[in-house]
Image (tube, rainbow, N blue to C red; front, side, top):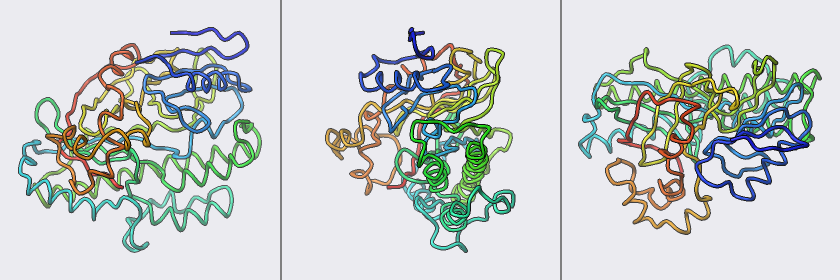
Length: 377
């Protein structure tokens, strides 16, 4: 759906429900920002600081760090293993996997730099745009590399329709993305950085580094997960099946015959034939997809189901007992039930409805159900 904005950029929407008034106001404000040429709103849209999650904007010269967010390069990684999901049918086996994962893939940081996997040399040798960011890279960047994070980040073991066991990881650039966003957006807020200026080029340089860091971090977590699964159930990953896509970034892309800076905040690239990953929530289905290259969406799709409740509302309305009921059939650490309520399935939109309303953006190639989930709290 396209909605007219006489003094603003055109806004194209794919909605699973009526847009809340506060989200509508935020989208209207974004469409009216300087140099914004086009706005696409995904079905998982929900309110967030400055720019809503599930929003895609295009500009000709201005870069808006707020339209990417702090977790630059946050994304999804999936890979199949060579064993069936029934290898985790035993509670004892599942609990051992969960216990080993908590050690192999820390949620917050490694105990010391010696415990952390080594960052690729391409990341270590590449200085960021200012000394303060390089200091964060040497300290937090090292200790948080190959760690999962909290919130909606997760490591999930899943079964496809044929019963094959898959790994899915959702994580990003951790403290590095926040530091880069904070450094470059300190004075800009919702005013942009000219991509041709020193400041604009510095942000683009640092954000490319953060995307590479996040991708390498996910791969290191995949390798650690493979080691755990091999030790416990003899599993290996199939390298041919790996899918990696990130949903918080800005990139120069060609659309409608013009080169634009496309900002995605909680939206997957969905160019024609581009592989994607769209998770539901804890306890619900996830999907592997191929993009359809819809021009009006700036070749984008949703990055998930999207929140239906704020974290505060979810904690107030969903009891630990109700959370455990919703998670029936999925292995997780029951000691964390109270702390995980904000991520309960009912705190999110219906992912099947989200997929239905974006059928012209992406097509489903694989559906997966959760078997075991590991999350940091």
